[in-house]
Length: 116
Figure: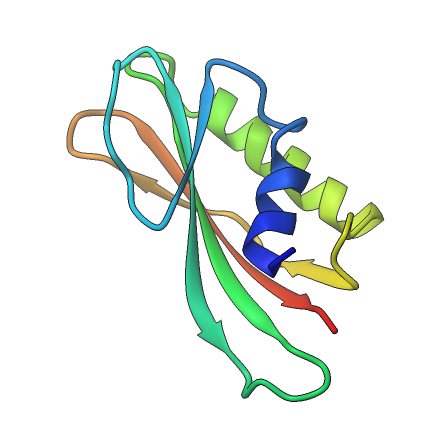
């Protein structure tokens, strides 16, 4: 299992429908859906202990304000603080808010992980 697979498996129970988890790039869908995009962003050189890094982008549904995406971001941060799931370690950064042009709320979280 790769770190990306472990991260997606970790997020799945935290983000039930209407959240849609995607990897690598965002493919927009119904504006009533919420999206979580997991993107790899590099990391340290691959040695005995690997340190992959990711960004999680949470995009709220149209017309619902920032609270659902904000609550999901905080749920993820707290869950990562308590458990790394199948990964050895996960360290989330603080969620950063960015409003979209169409009014949807976006929160981005940088995530550092450690695998063996």
